[in-house]
Length: 172
Image 1 (cartoon, rainbow, N blue to C red):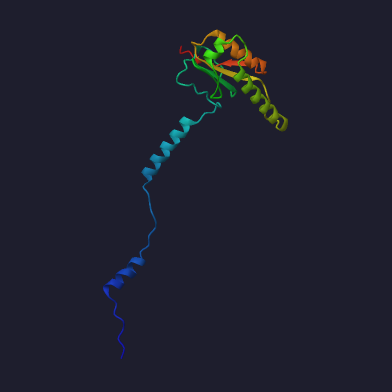
Image 2 (spheres, one colour; image 1 turned 120 degrees about the horizontal axis):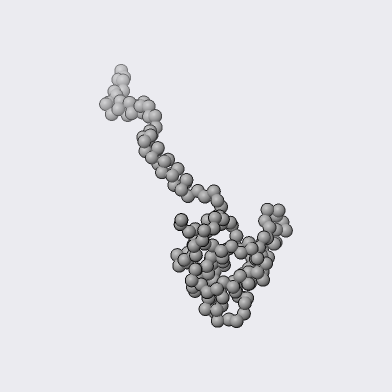
């Protein structure tokens, strides 16, 4: 005579746990709305529809102007009281430039020549890129005019003749 296998309470509990229908993780809707709102605000604040924004270094005090023209994407030359920077790369020391009697700044001249050659090489293979000779000069309002004249002359010698000076908009 055989006896039926007795089912203990433990076996019944294991079977009943497996039969429960778990519908999955259900996050609270309020938390999701808060997170999405914060992401939306952050993205709207960081979005720029006007192209590249010129970032001014901390040690520069740009002159003020009432000009209304928006900045365009061009080659940027930054001049502070110590260095001449081309696209954030140091190309000359201000003291050396002011001590020289030459109008051409050799480091800047070489950098602009390389930049122009690269742009013209790309221009040969693309219809979208064209060398226009546009350049933006970010200069501290305390730099000497003699230094600015040498920078502009050097840029002009390499074909960068369309100058724009970066300024701060005057509050009215």
